[in-house]
Amino acid sequence: MNLPQSPQPAVLGPVRSYPSLVASAPEAIGRIRPGQRVFIGTGCGQPQALVHALLDRAGEMEDMEIILLVALGEPAYLHRELAQHFRLKPFFIADGADAGTHSHLDDYTPILFSDIPELFRSGRLPIDVALIQVTEPNEHGLCSLGVSVDVTKSAAENAGLVIAQVNPQMPWTAGDGLVGVDDLDILVPCEEPLLEIALPDPGETARKIAEYVAALIPDSSTVQLGMHRIPQALLTFLKAKHDLGIHAEAVSDGIVELLEAGAITGARKSNDRGKIVCSMCLGTRRLFDHLRKNPAVLVRSAQHVSDPAVISRQRNMVAVGLASEIDLMGQVCAHSPGGGFSGMASHADFVHGAAKARGGKMIIALESTRDDGTTSRIVPHLSEGAVVVATCFEVHYVATEYGVAYLHGQSLQERAMALISIAHPDFRARLLREAIDRCYVSSDLATVEGQIHVGPPAWRSAAVLDDGTLVSFRPMHPTDEPRVRDLFHSLSKQTMYYRFMSNVARLPQRQIQNFVYIDFRDEMAIVGTIPEAYGDQIIAVGRYYLDPGTNRAEVAFIVRDNWQNRGTGTFLLKYLATIARGQGIAGFTAEVLADNMPMLAVLRKSGFRLRSQLDGRVHSIELDFE
Image (cartoon, rainbow, N blue to C red; front, side):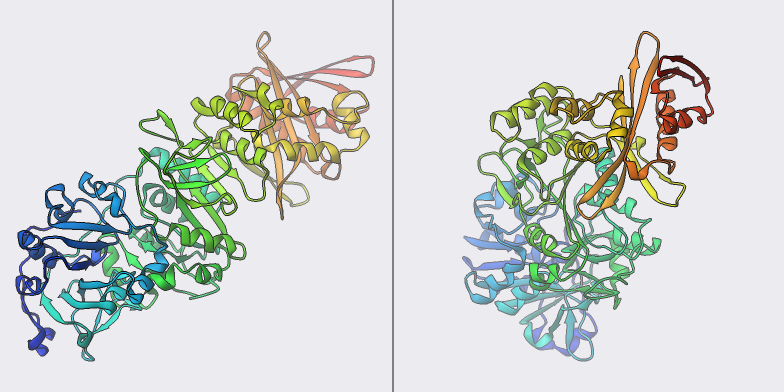
């Protein structure tokens, strides 16, 4: 973000109708007294001419308190050398804020974004002066706050003195941002480009996380994103969606891209149908031009947009939040010592609202490590001084570059194992030991240390069975243990006999763990799933075990009884063969009972060269890929 050094004031046509209110920026700032509390408009709506005039008189403004919401880039009034003149009272500090900003963390005010307007209105945080930026007034004597309504409108309504920079380049927006000229004390006409935020390339790690998150967002969802690299990367993967809606604290240029792609229509929103709703707009001129007098975009107050009650009334509300840490119970931290600081803004509001919405989801997205990969963001317990923004009761999904953990309604052990499985591989063994020590996880799982692996997303697929049913196929996941147990409990005695070649009444816990914890090198397991109300149900498992001496892998399948003879096994064999060939494996072997006709039929129609030898009641089969 570039802050111009000397904006040039200009007397604008509509402002001439109010000569008694017009002043230059230095004259207007001259009305401020030392020791007063001054609110500065938010983000791209920051009144630059007024800020520069304030800085020019910094030496005369002893003990002044600056109230601000978003600190973007490095505006001069945040620098250390001005601390003797200005004391910051921030509600939110953006990623990338300078060291001078972080030196004022003692005055950071943790509060729900939706509660800030009431703080101003009630007088618990009185505002002496509000420096804001508005459009030119219309024929009715009304101005628009344009890109920043958020808490700015409340600040203007409750300040003792309101100084407004009147800028023709500020877009007139629909929503709650109208302000009457009669409610403004001083008008400072000054035309200049708005501050712009062009977000950098998010990077490959953020893109991997975003791809996982996008898979959790169904068509017709209403989405809250953020201004971090992960939400920005997510925009690319949302372009193929349909009828998305937006209800968010802030929107960026990416919203324009989604509109142009046809992904956003808002047609299925339960509130504000067909409208994009936000409280601020942080982007470039491309976004600002799209907003100008656009009735489809409502820029409303934080008191409305971030109200958890309003959010919860939006069906299929999906909120994507960020974290600096998450512990093995699922508690989410937005600030931890050494872990970065981004304040809370509306994070907690959307956590509460999305968790209560019908069909709502709260998704936490974070990179698995920080400090150049030396520290895990998934931790046994939160750091001292951590700011918790979501409890273990509210988070539905957590996504890292290693996958997705589903937490809602899961036991402590299931939560811990799910989170460990998406942690960076370098930290999984240590996290498992800590989880066992804290009794989050059974000591029986000590044997799987070093075996917690997740298959790559490239091995995901889907197939339409002979009867038209769509089945998803993916690598086995460490959190599949309860679903695998349910699968075995559902099988008939005959199916169990065909699979294990003996009468098996039950599988011991250790054997089930052996099914779940695999290395995806010498062992492979692909599961077929269908959606159920409580989550995916596993209907089939296909596995192979490599014999390095022969470079052949023994293959085996299990299919739920009511899903047999429907093409599931046929697809699993072909898909496992595709993976095995990609791994350089020469072929498959299988041991099949002579009366297991369904399995024999699947192998015989595989299309691979087959050799079979019958020994008693067992066929020993070899399949050659070449």
